[in-house]
Amino acid sequence: MKSAKSVVILLIAVAAVACGPGDNVTIEGQPLQVVATTTIVGDLLRTVGGEDIQVEVLMGPGVDPHLYKASAGDVRRMSSADAIFYSGLHLEGKMTDVMVGMNQRGVRTVAVAECIPEDRLIALQGFDGLHDPHVWFDVGLWSETVDCVTRALTELHPEGADAYAANAKEYLDELAELDLWVRRRAAELPSEQRVLVTAHDAFAYFGRAYGFEVRGLLGVSTASETGTADIQRLAEFIVEHEIPAVFVETSVPPRFVEALQEAVAAQGVAVEIGGSLYSDSLGNPGTPAGSYAGTVRANVETIVGALQGAGGAD
Image 1 (cartoon, rainbow, N blue to C red):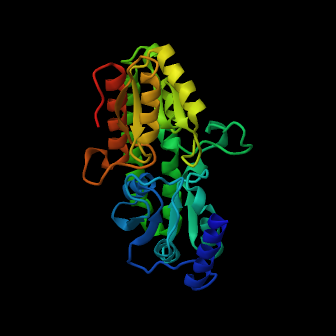
Image 2: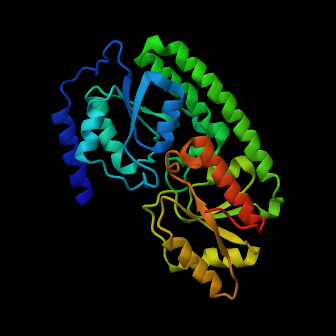
Image 3: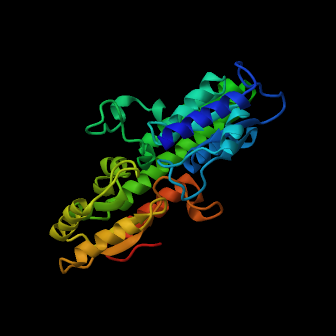
């Protein structure tokens, strides 16, 4: 009931703040004012848009988009933007209705992950018609969002079309090189060592693309619950397969993986916490993991290093 009431209040705020049913108008000579929900989407926008756009990101580093609730200030920022870009596929679960309200009031909304062909998405078992939203962990798949963003920005600001196209081409080349680098690093691990155990089930696309078996303690959404039986089953899997390390995530409390580590210890086996992975957000601005490419590299170095037995990086 509380959640439903919060959505109603935010939708009322949308109606109150939005000035009318028409599209927001961009002032000639002014950069586009766009809002991104997550740091990952924000990085994509800044890379393609360059100096022609100003990006405001609602969720900072380490914020969990599955559980995020838009504030009244967020609603005001979204209502006054030229467009809102979000990941989609229900990643921002509690904000979906707000996005619908914004669109109905004339604010352009773009769900970048929903530009990817459905046959390339991973279906969620038991949830008819829903797909895993964590598409950015497959670099090649995330590349498909670049054209989507380029088209949307061009439609919003045709004068910037040439710059957007040039930025997009350069970025696609960079992502192609990054994808090859991930494949080379992953190949340094024998196939039997490519088992990734994390706090929540966010790495299925990574596993499919780069040959890892992936197990998450929580479900695809961190709103999922886990119990003693779930922890015990995963602990038994770790012991049976002699997995040397498991991983916490920057946007998920570490207590879940720490409980798993204790359950493994209770069976007389030690499993290390191999490091902290960036799952639903990038690292802090100005750090190596502050960009999408930097985050991917940091994650892969942590995973490969820990599973090789060399110890992961925090």
